Length: 462
Image (tube, rainbow, N blue to C red; front, side, top):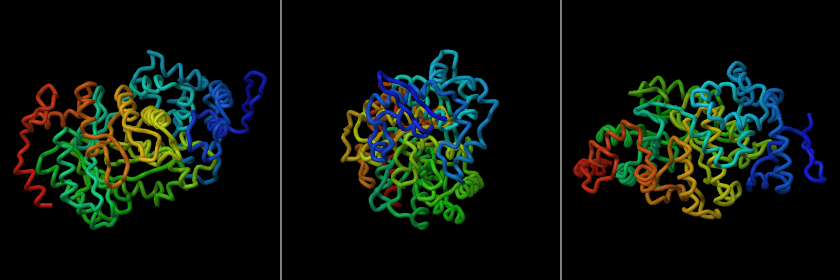
């Protein structure tokens, strides 16, 4: 099948659906690096025109990635539900955009649609949407998950408290975690990116976090973001693990670069469920993704970085995760050059993840060598808040001293709570009131009541 249109006096021809999707993508440095981007704005416009007129059924008629034996492609086709797809089966991509934006397309309608979508359909419609469209549709998507509290409820936004330490120092982790808790960060989870990846250090970190949560009776979950195979070994030793983490990507080869496959993730999921640690639910997985991951592993196979990113969401959805987030600006300017590209990618990923049925969060972040700053992150944070983002990540002072990148701070969480009216998970909000962090109206208090002796004892015990 060929894809062609005329703009002015020029005829544009796109040989494959993969090429069409790539050429229709909004400008980003990663696609230029991969040699798949449009030559300029006119060719991009031509590709978007062709894409808008493409029937959605076309995405079910071919393997767009085009790699034999890719287990993610097999997963996508095996999980597609024709009955759920039926209400939109007659639409083109452009008509699908209009259908999504229509007032009659409610949260309930979008929930029923999820099994009928493929990642490539979701990516395609996002390419012809402006930022306002991405925000409006994502705000109608509701994905509620539970483990020790309830996440994804309408009008709320959670935060991940990220107390990383360059040396995995227990006292440093505790001090950073408590700093975030005293500003109300941590209802999504308290999650540490370990500097090491040994089973012994993994168990030490999760035990430390578990003691913190148990001592202060915090209704949240914790996670050490070590490799999934390390988590499996730790679970075999009965470590107190709430969430099992893994980075994932959109092709089998890219996931093999992470040292995983679907079988490994199934093993981890079953082991985590067997621990039976949930108090209000049993969503036990946590995944991170990010545009550029497949390209950086030379495992994109000519697919643009945003489309192959959405394929990772098929992997995530398979395991009913508590949380998923895109680390949108983490990889660097080679993939998202500046603040404009980071903002666009963050809203794309959030829209695609939510539409596909994921409890989607965003690490609102950038590297120090990117053409971006905290003003860009403010813009993205406000836009995501309007879009109903499930959670964002907070680190002390916005500066992650272990991973060496800039993110949000716990002060940003306070801004969202008090200025934009986005309270945390209800169980965590009640804990904050009980411990004097906020008043009953959710405003921060100056006379913090958290027991200082308890905090000191925790730090000493570390």
